[in-house]
Length: 233
Image (cartoon, rainbow, N blue to C red; front, side, top):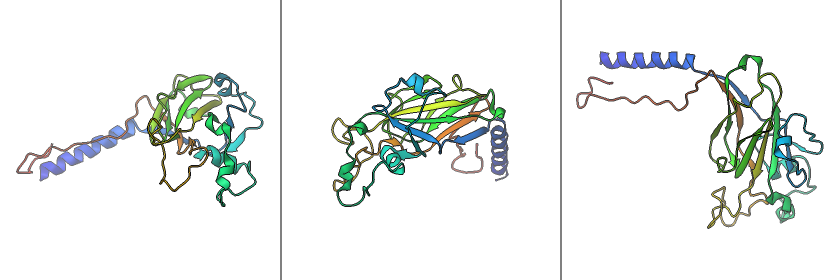
């Protein structure tokens, strides 16, 4: 029993020391002050949209998480209640079948200079291309699926002492959960889909920094000296 307690104490002390030396240094939740617009309305190149001085006059201001339609409703684009009667059908718009941009500018504190920077996407529905400061970080072959948590390394393209521009080009799912369709959010057969099929950023977006190395989902497995249980390794 004493050996078990001793080993447990050593493991806890080691884990604490390791966590202090390699802990996550900074966590920035990118929630407010996003801008949203359709690629049909703004056909500019992604390399320009994802730069600081791009003109976003006429873009919609949104907070994330948000679907495309939620962003439009928040900006009072429609003058009727979509949940009343058959009003949901009035939301039909060919632009909803095309990609939409979600754009956000942010800065890092001076204390984070030189640290590794990770963008964590907690949910994109359904596919996306991700750009930062004029550079494509990941395309829709990697950013795909509404319930996936995806980490992207921004370190090589981040500005530590200026404004960073993140632009996420989102495309809604098509024929979700049908044959040859996208494996996306589905409903019971008596619930109508919204016209954007819940396309958008449907969970948090975070920027994290690490002091060179980050560890996630650690696991300590204990091996007992069976059948006695007298020793645990």
